[in-house]
Length: 91
Image (tube, rainbow, N blue to C red; front, side, top):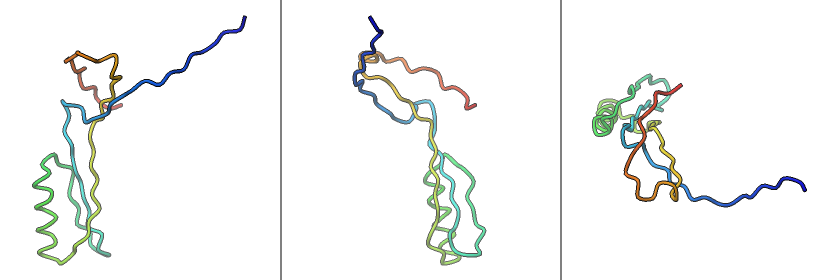
């Protein structure tokens, strides 16, 4: 008899890890402009910095990069569990 595998669909959920922060960085897309915003977890301050740059220069377009730590969990294994694993450092 040969070995067999059983494959079944397993439901998962993905979200930002509750012990991490979402950060945003940005750069102006107007040609010749070198304005950049270093990564910050203060999303409102990031928006204000971009609007201030627009007010001073008239440059209206930015590339924004949002980054977070994703947390994926199997739903059926985690039903009723409130424990969140510790946040590991990136490799």
